[in-house]
Image (cartoon, rainbow, N blue to C red; front, side):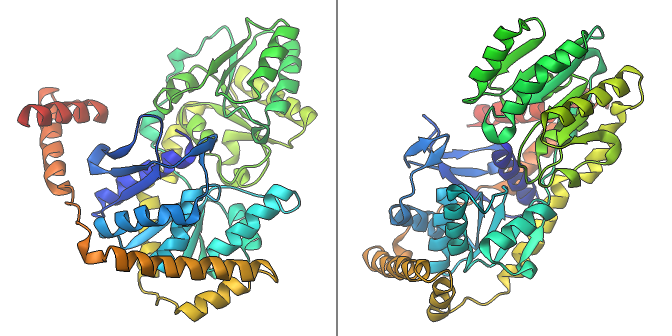
Length: 453
């Protein structure tokens, strides 16, 4: 589970706590297909679409429309909230949702360039899907500037709501770190965009300069082979530990083994990883790119340009600060738990929902005018795509009218919440006032429900 998936999960949980009904639609993951219920009754539809590369689905445009329409009507949805410019399902849901008259907003989690072929194509498609959007959310001010330029949006129609972190899940544990070493932790996808080439270049230099420094690297990707070759070439098997892919619930156990967290990304809209690392009590060294300078206070982080020499200098300064105890990372968790709260994110997102709920639906001719303005040739193509989408919707309404679609039963949120609170009160009483971990409470709740059934 990556940053966007984590964002979706935690935001959904807080919105449910605030009294909303939340449904997630995503593609199938292996054997995880159909409909599943997650914590607190969060309902997830795993759509059977073809995954072609790195969990990216094959764009089908109209092929997803009948199923999406069925889900929206079946679940009595009011607002569609899309996440991720790379998500084909997200872009298709925005187009189909507006055709059906739904209120739609979009959260952008990425930064894009303007010069390479990939960015030009993606930006043009994003301009198409966001031409008729009700509101856009970005995770940083840098991301907002980037999205406004790429999609030719009005800045007034774009809000900044940062990511957040559950600080209680990343509590520091000083006893977990090896006192004989200064440990640098890297947890990232091992791809070009995350600066893995820089990592390959600087590790041998740092190991040569400091004999008591070691690296723990978590994550997987096509660049892992470069790290393995570097470790083999410089005989650093005893100082570089490659953990491979790490599940999200194991990230904290890896982080607390370290003293410094290193991020070498070449582009980042926010970078939740450095917030999690600081919460776990690590001093952060990061490349100064994208929205990273907006994330942490200056006493928690050293910045470097995305260059080999500058990164070596920044890491050396951090090692010196850790060695001579010039920083106190153990206090970072208390500082960050109020700065990055999912409750605050949910409250601000709710205000966006309230805002777009009051807007009027644009007539068909106005939608065509917006799409036509996307480009001399692209505008005409987009208008044809939208017109065909509208005709397909009319066809679906004729073949299977809305009133003929069975409505799904709403999950009994209140009953579940009362049961959860009763179990929690019981556990608190039995533990003589000591608070029990939420995961244990949820486990007991599940067991109790099974017995009851």
